[in-house]
Length: 340
Ligand code: CP
Image 1 (tube, rainbow, N blue to C red):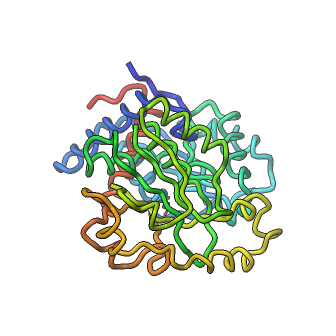
Image 2: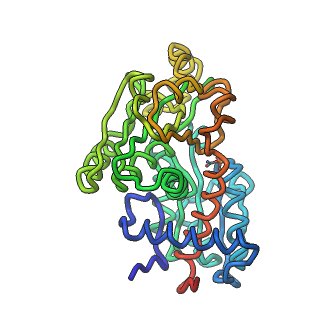
């Protein structure tokens, strides 16, 4: 019997595979209810979900806001820049804890000067101070509801995940970005038995702790995890590709102010050919092959329009599944029972 009521969701790595499976199952049931034109049970009736956005969002905000309302709850959108940011995180967290039945926090990228670890530290402080569940809506390190929704789409499209190759590849962009989605994908895909290849140029290494966990996950699930430094080599035989830019390890270690954004972009400019095109999918990937992206995708940089709008792209289904993954997360963590 899986019980997620009251549980924080900071990273998929902190939920068991059974709990993740249960959340996916609930997300699929909620999707079926909505798709047939019905309304899910109002399990969040008279409950408040406070969504604290230190950093902006299109999808995550929209999905959490709509999902809370559909479940009968009240989504309170807080643009943190309009609040008293000077106070201790603990004090703000204690206050929201008394108003809320659940708290979501998003803090990443330029809102933490790209300093790796700074966003997760705030999310953890909220989780320590609050008795209600704290849901990580993306920080410097993790993006759990994204990982949950993405694996749902991949399974939907490929069937059995065991033995399927998932290439998560660095791709060119003219703007620095964090690596929360990358690291979350690496973690959840290795938990579910996939053969994961993380592909990037030298210097873009992810958190060594995530690499260690991914190797351990793969050992336990019967999957595999490898790192590759060649764009085309990494794509060979893949069933899934996720082309996404992220910052160099040094940039994310010291932060943008100290390292310099121009210096960082000059490094990316050496790898402009790390851009996914339909030719890569057709010539290098296995069949079936799907192209994913958490969005926003940097069109003409990370990937061409041809591939993002092409026959293998599943980006809009993925965004849709992410809605239900978030709905399931809210229902399971904030409601005692979810009758479906
Ligand atoms: N994928 C995702 O987190 O998108 P947003 O940044 O728009 O929320």
